[in-house]
Length: 502
Image (cartoon, rainbow, N blue to C red; front, side):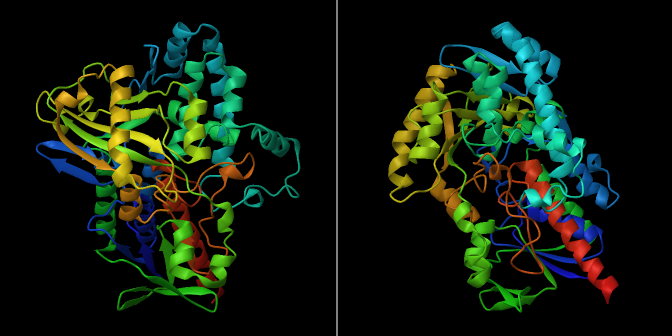
C-alpha cells in the first residue's frame, strides 16, 4: 500500500484522495484552513447562506466518475437539479436574453433577438461540439503539459489525426471564432463569457476553448441542493468511508526532495514522510515556495501568468428580485474596454460585467422567507504592485452597485441589504494561497499554448503530482475535480508499475 500525502483539501485534492483510497492507497489530506473544500467554502449569517466560491456546476459526469471509483452512486451523496435557463443576461440597452438549457430553445431565443444568429449559433455549437469531442479524446483524463502529450503525430499521422489537429483552430482566438458565426454584439458577448469560467480574455485565448460552450449546453448547468458546498461535503464523506485521514490547520512549509524525488513534507516542527505527494496548492507557488532549487528554475514559471482575480459581494436582502434567474450576467457596455482594463492595463474595469447568483430561485432556504442571498462577482486584475484593496474597495463597490442599478433593474439594492460581506483579491490571495489573488489559477492566453497547464505528473520531481485549477486541465469545478482524478490515476499507474518491476 502506497502512503500518499495530499497538500490542500480543495476540490482537486478531495477528488484525488477519494480516487486513491478507492484504489487501495493510504491517503492523508493536509489542509491549512479550518475547513475542507478550498474555495468552495460557506458563509452563514442571520439566516442567510452563501456559497463563497464556485457557484456553477457543469459536467456532472466528472463527479460520477470519482464516486464510481469506489463503486458508489453519486445520487446517494448529492441531489443535483438541472437549471433552465442556464443564464439570464442583462445589457445596458435594456435587452434581457436567456441562455436556455435545451440548445434548440437557446437557438430560438437568440433568433428572436437577432434572426440571422439563430443559424449562426447552431453553426457555432457544431464547432463547439467538435472541439469538446477533441478535448475529451486528447486532453482530458490524462496528464498533459504540452502538445506532445496529446497525440503522437509520428505514429498516428493519418487523415483522422490531421482532421483533429485542424479542428483545434490554432489560428483563431475564442472571440475570433465566435465572430465568424455571430453578428449581434450582445450574442457575441454572451458566448464570449464562457471563457470567464477560466478567468481569461476571449481576445487572447485559443479557439479550442470554445468547447466549453458544448460542455455546458450539451451537459447542462446543475445546482447541488445545499449549495456547491455540498460537493466537497460529499467527497469528504466518501473519503471517510474509504479510510482517508483529513487534517486541517496544517500549513505546509516545504516538500523535501532527495535525489530528485519527493519524500516528505514539513509543517512547522512536524515532518511527515510519504511515498508519493499530490499538491493541490497553486502549481507555481508549489515549486517556488515548497520546493525551490533546480525544480523551480526548470518549471518555466515565467510563461505561467496568473488569471484574473475578482471582488465578491455577499448580500443578504430583505426582499427578493423576482426578475432574476438563478444565474445572471449583467454585461459591460464595451467588452474590449473591459478586457483591456483587466488583462492588459491591470486596472479594474470602469464599467464591469457582474455575475449574480440568486440561489433562492432553486433553494428558498438560503435566505429568510421573502429574502434573497445574492452572490455578486466582478472580475478584476490579479494583484499588481500598488493595488491596495482596502483603499480601492469603497469606490469600486459603488461602481458595482451603480452597474446593477442601471442595467439589471436593481436601483434600490442598497436599501434592501441587511447583511453584507466581501472578498477582495487580497483576501483571496491570503485565504487560499493562490498566485497573486488569481481565482482561476493560470491565465489561458496564447493561440497554441493557452490551452495547456502544468501536467499532473511533475516533470521536475519524481513522486510529485499536481491537482487543482493551476494544473491540467485547468480551472472551474469540473476541471479541478478532473485534475484530482488524473493526478490520482497517474500516481496509481506509477506506483503499480514500480511494484510490478520489483
